[in-house]
Length: 221
Image 1 (cartoon, rainbow, N blue to C red):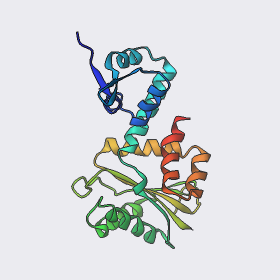
Image 2 (cartoon, rainbow, N blue to C red; image 1 turned 180 degrees about the horizontal axis):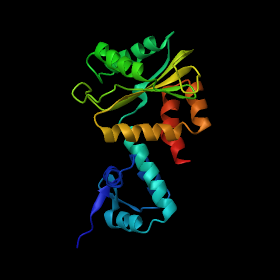
Image 3 (cartoon, rainbow, N blue to C red; image 1 turned 90 degrees about the vertical axis):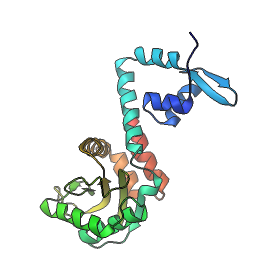
């Protein structure tokens, strides 16, 4: 039987990880590569054998890498909005809603503002440690073009009725299509925020790339 080869991108899709993870695996000789024309490929049988022989710790590590890949489906450097001006929660929600429109995630930022404010008035989405997880009360897949997460940071700390009574200046706006995406994202972000290093970087980062790195790398530590 002829061997089946996968490009590095195909291997990443097969493993449900990012392309960079597979490149690192080939660099560290987890998989041998074969040059076919101008493209490097890996033997699918080698990938299957590696999967079949993972130990418990390796299985857990792969699951974490898959989580990063899934989160990256919703989040990238364009979805970072650093140091915007807002003096209260309504201005903060307004700024984040305008960013969603600028990114063409939604068509109408006024609609988004209204539904997020309505959710916020039921109970605060501020979860403590200066962070709020903004989202509408109900999912609106017809209104949200692409499932997305936006990270924003305000210059000023804002009173947000947080559970720890601390003001907020770090915001995640979750604009997703279904409960699976929403629950995964809440769990993923909550896990990250248990790490003080992540919080410190979110507070002090000066570039969008630093934010992306800390939200997609530290979970693997």
